[in-house]
Length: 370
Image 1 (tube, rainbow, N blue to C red):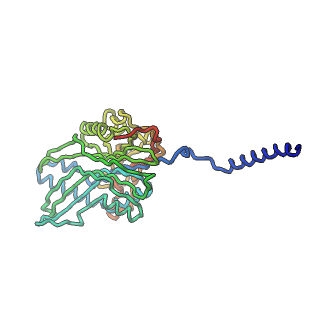
Image 2: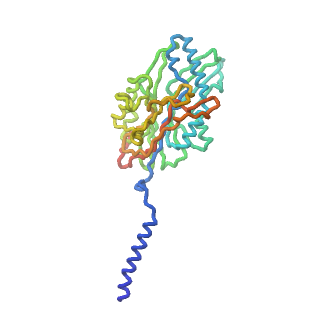
Image 3: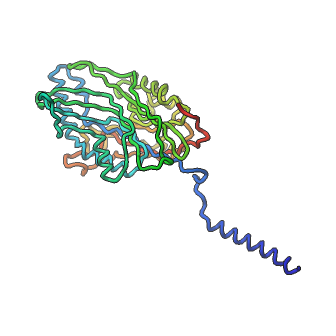
């Protein structure tokens, strides 16, 4: 009996030692082991249709308008869309965003002036199509979830023997190789703002509609609404009206919201569209993760050939509303790339892109959206 009593403490000691050794052998659990990984990586990217329209819109006569329109078209064609698409595809492959908000998705469509008209392939461009082709060549799986067209104008140009049509819109791209547990998309919506600018020209009134796209996403059980948009650039009152429509429209939801895009208003511009969104409860992901850093995104020269970056403002933004955690945010495409194209293109776009890794709020903290 005495031998058993002496053995008992020894057995307990062995158990304690073995337990302590096992706990030392187990690695410490990472902070996110408290639940599944709810990280969503998003990108906003203004593609730039290839030319500025300031001189076109300033034309006083039809002859001046056509001259400036031809110059803009030639500048756009010289910007080498295929090379720029390849560079943007490289950015996407490097960053692996689950969702990409595209602004200035561009379609240059050129047809002969014959009857019936025939396409001119050398002067016809589908910029998003080029990017998707480049991504497929790299083994990256993306698709356009939604496309909404905005500005659309066509001009017959006798000097070119062709009719040139420019269509600019917004596109939401999504990865298609993720399991539904990591990315499930539903309730895709899109629209055009009622508030828009319309300008007179020698060939008639030109309307410049702006758009938005929204999609509800679920990541490891956590839900959020992602909105991509492109607000007006040349008239602050119009831009503010569009921001108000965004708040009353796609952003009017109980879900946590991620708003990405080219807002055409610096975040520090008091009373402008970006500040309006901050006042409505949105937070600036860049300021959260990189306070004090400039994060400039706009704008390079019209021909994209400036040897030193001309970025002076931060108008391409990733905003959140809800209990998100910003793991990281970064700018891409802001450095000159002298070897990008034989034609001398130095930048993928006149804008830089912005990418953020966001941890979605825990499902218990989010309400159902509409």
